[in-house]
Figure (cartoon, rainbow, N blue to C red):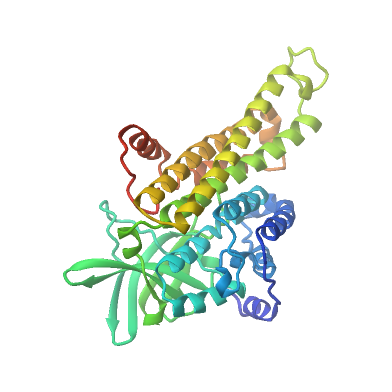
Length: 406
């Protein structure tokens, strides 16, 4: 981050969003703005610094802060709709805040009142939290990023990859493991990006979601205060909504990208596509086969939207009264929504290219970005295993495991 960017951020007034309706209105307005430059950002890999600053200024990064700390405490369903709306404007921008809100949910579940007051205030001030959770190199998924304590200070060392949003964040919540009583215990450590020993490398080179900033972050003996350490593992050892809350937003991203593909598909068919050579119609919009395909895409997206809203309501119920059964119901409802949003998003992107024909693949509109974006993001965690969890729950009354991927 350049010094000029820091100064701009520090002097900008930050709005406070007061309600669910206002959050959706703000997201809609910004999404329409972001859609205008989405092609160029994808094609040139132009990082969306100005767009993220607009989101900070508009107050979107504080919408889940509880009311007792000054936020709107929007519902999970509203948050999911906000993420879908932003993803409709630009799939990458829609994914960037996912880890921000995930970190705030971990804070809500496991943070102390003092930690909540401090970090929620940052979110309301437009502060952005990234993430440094994932690692590579071990097939057993055990984290190698270590945390050790020296008095009231905590030292973190390790290397992370696929750190979506870390590039744009002022604070990077980092999953680190400490050795306690002969076993590994994991924590989420809120590390300032300007802390000595933090190195962020912009090496994300996926063919989709190209400007999410999902690069590598390394921590070389980074020192923070104990107040920056929030229990993580303990929040999964009991019934909490952290997992389904995270996955709800992922489902929303796929829905939003599918909605963007559908929007562009309608415009292209109406205004630029030519009818099939053997179709006795004047325009592509009159072709019965094209009309059928468009209808199928529309139905799939609207079903995904309804399932997302339903899952959001069930997550809210589990948040208000978390126990083994309510959290299991939330996880399954979100898994079902995620399965369908994956299918609907991919179908919309595929049909855009199919119905547009060869000319659509050569258009300056960069229509293939929708397919690249949704194909990349739907690989985030394997949907095929969600079918297993859903089947076991409904057939054998078996609760799903508690983790961030379900």
